[in-house]
Each structure stands twice: as C-alpha cells, then as structure tokens.
Length: 190
Image (cartoon, rainbow, N blue to C red; front, side, top):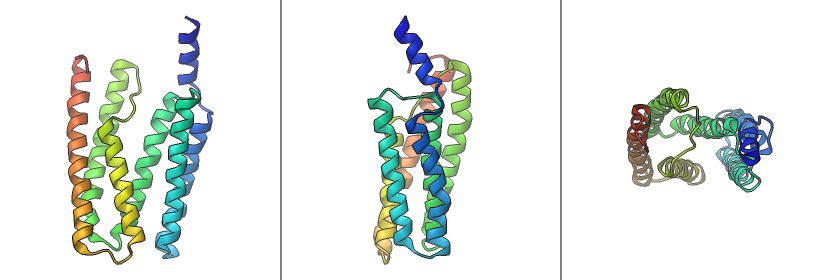
C-alpha cells in the first residue's frame, strides 16, 4: 500500500530533474530558429539541436533510472519533442520545399493526438507515453533533420527518400494510434 502511495506521489510531482530538462528544451527552440533563420548558421542550429537531443535522452534516462516519471513529464517531454521537430521542419522548409508534406502530416497527427489523448485521459484518468512507432518517428525525424543540416548540398534524391520514409512512418504511426485510442475509448483492453 505504501509503495502505491509513493508511486502516486511521484506521478503528481511537478519539479523534477527530467521536467526541468524538458523545460530547457523548450527554451532551446527559439535559439535553434534564430541560429538557422536569422544567423543563417545551420551548423550552429545543428549543434543546439544535438544539445536538445542529448537532454531528451538524459531526461528519459533519469526519469526511468531514478523513478522520476511524472504525469507532467509524460506531457512535457513529447510536447518539447514535437515543437522542436516542427521548428526544425519549418526552418528546413525555407531551403527544402519538399518538407511541406512532413509539416502537414505532423500537424494533422499531433492535432489528432492532442484531442484523442485528452479524451483517453478523461476516460481512463491515465497519461500514456509514446508507443514504439512514435519513438521510431521521432528518431527518423531527428535523423532526417540532422542529415539535411549536416549535408548542406544534399542530393534531391536522398532528400526525397528521407522525407518519404518519414512521411510513411508518420502515417503508419497515426493509424496505429487511431486504432489504440479508439479501442481505449470503447473500453476494450489494449
């Protein structure tokens, strides 16, 4: 009984190291945009993006290793990821117009996830973390962004291939989330 109480207290904590790291990632977003669009320094933007990625890994590791997983963290972490990804896709769109499908798919996916996620939380009272396919999308997006930043004169074929791969995985992911959330909202065991 005591461990359940402690676990519930941990889930409701607000100020934790992982949550502070997620907040730090929010603060890096305008710096990334400024570096890429204003300073026109893609490598600096890439370095700041790398720092953001490392803090993302650190906050996940610390949260699991030191039992600092919180409901707020389950929300802050993916929101920081998505805003960082969106910011970088929009920055890259200024040089690579073929990024537009990723921006559109991401916007639709995240709008769906926000609405259905709120409905699931309301029905179950639980905040669910990302599934495996969501993590793959995150990895592919960061990889695609990194390649486009590092390889300044990327060939159109490679660029389109990476963008296409991301788009396909994003669509697969949203379909799997639709299935899962629909089942949850119907009261079926997932």
